Image (cartoon, rainbow over all chains, first blue to last red; front, side, top):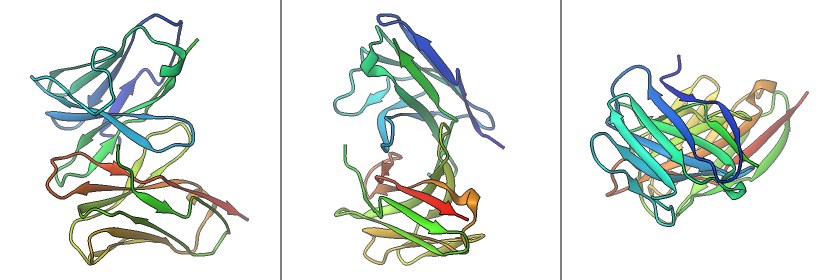
Length: 114
Length: 112
């Protein structure tokens, strides 16, 4: 069964509003989780590594003030897209590492900013 | 960010045919993973490879970790309609922590 869940599965919001996406590890604790963004017909691009109890590590070119990541518990990481604009519309996917450094992905969240 | 070169970009095959796709990089990887993604869903792990030369099967799927550690391939035998989807390779660079680099994807279409 699924080991990672995401909520919501899809969200539509107005430009300028903020949107929070939750990523939960369903089986074991996850001290590290990952956030990816995927544009239509494109591959997954890592945005940031979420670390429980410490600051997230952002990839080059990803605005940390725009994409706020909070990993406040061992099973939950959240991504908040602040002041969303239409160009932020994308498919956001989180993942966690397994016992052998493989990654297990959530079902994704489709964000549409009007 | 860096991406792996994956080929072919897309392929149309008939049900029952075998499929082969590969992933190459100019860098050395210490882990290769193969995923399948259906529309509107997250990627699902198919096969994980950890040693150069390793050959691993999962049902009709077989994947190999290239000897040079710079490539990997995935074969699907006797394809069926539910094999339709996008297949991604992903690798972990030597000397990095847990981050994955993803391939550009291979879109597979199966006709009856």
